[in-house]
Length: 92
Image 1 (cartoon, rainbow, N blue to C red):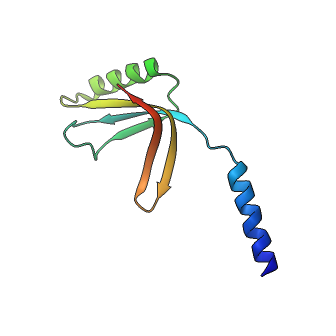
Image 2 (tube, rainbow, N blue to C red):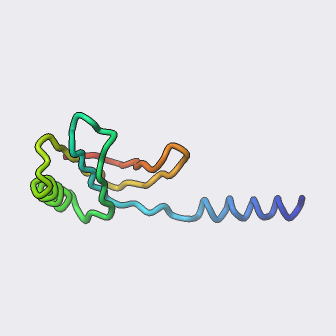
């Protein structure tokens, strides 16, 4: 029992000290009326870059009812419901 307590305590301390990676993300919605379907790109360098990539991708794919959003300073969450992002700011 003592070893289990020490192991759990060590995992808690290491987990708390580990810094979460923050990044920018581009989410493209091929049909802006169906937000459950998206294409996401991580590690976008800036808001301007996000906008340029989104417009080029939408244009080249030929999407006629698409939209996008740029998430700034995001962290990825993986849980039983799937993968999603929490961002400090979301812009277009």
